[in-house]
Length: 81
Image (tube, rainbow, N blue to C red):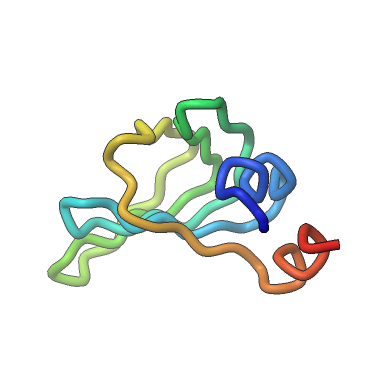
């Protein structure tokens, strides 16, 4: 079984998508994360629920505000081994 925090830790340097509880989505390069699932993204794009898009150079998303996240499927297979 792969724990979400372990999957995120092994995804550093790759593209991830975060869906927040407020309906916003961020897609960007995972710079780092901590044990509270606070996520540091760089070169991110914010997509608002109404479809508006904004570019953000760097940002931090608090773990408690994350509804779900997605990573490249190859990373999931790699972490299962």
